[in-house]
Image (cartoon, rainbow, N blue to C red; front, side, top):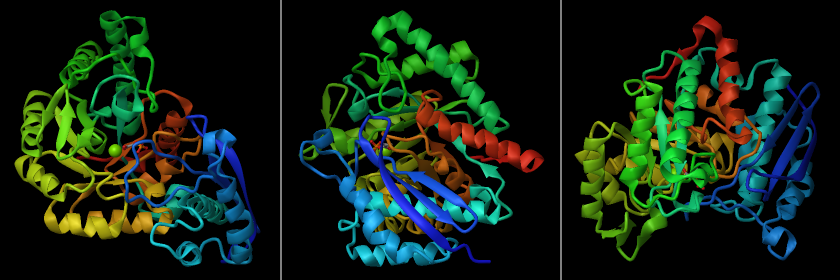
Length: 416
Ligand SMILES: C=C(OP(=O)(O)O)C(=O)O
Ligand SMILES: [Mg+2]
């Protein structure tokens, strides 16, 4: 069956940081798909290019050029094609752009079309997006990784570590895990207010609290106290996204007011993992430090070591990392690479190598919930999309609730 593309239309909308981003509508003979593109703050140098207008409008952050590229360059080429030919459509856009990092058309233009195309084809087929992308045996929901406390570039405090996440690994279902995490998030809010005063529950970009802390251990101790209050100390674990490129300079890392060499930073992480129930470390080193990733992975074989800025969802960088054992998990961000097909390639390369995949939002998000479907379609073990609060984050968690309901008895909860 063929679902002819009848119309493609892009517009500028606002993301959760109040900056413009691209939204794309795709119409077929018998379906419709709408996708909105997220945006990062602690972006990796090797990510595909997000096309911004420059100039005064929205402080130079407009995306009218990217919108125009969809409406005037991409759309005319794609009209009449079959929306379910995802790979062919993605390859055509990659070739039209002609650069390695999508600098001509912009990864934001291309990705908007790519995701909207998948949604339009799913609706045209009468199949939910997760099943359309994943097939009939798609039954596993990821363990959510909730960012409950924010630092680094995502918060106005002095914590070096960007994301303090909690994972309800001991829950039996996704919905149970969501409830446990939300209860713990509220307990954490009360603890922070009691200890650090009213402003301590202001939030960062991803909805996690951004208390006026400096030391990593103070943040971890507050989370441990929240476990005591919520009573889920056995069921919930901790993950950190250090986003270490943001506190790296001239060969050293600034953490907790100290300057550490890469070797000292390894010892620091080992000590944290031995003290707290930490099961995951993302971007523990800067974005070129393949060797240090490999050293830490060898030292902490039981810990999930995730590459985000290091791999930027790019199979060339990932291939090198897999050969070097530089980590054991990929962070999957669709806008780092710019098409659904290429993101699936990266996830599959990870799985084939015995690595895990954590699907991920960006720090500026929209109400688009496709990420939840993508995570289920691929069978990702983990999904991070911020705190269990704020609509641009709960859009994804709530979509997972709907998917769980849709699967009924067949639904499984990932295990790591
Ligand atoms: C989600 C992240 O942040 P950003 O979108 O700002 O890169 C991250 O670093 O994992
Ligand atoms: Mg990260």
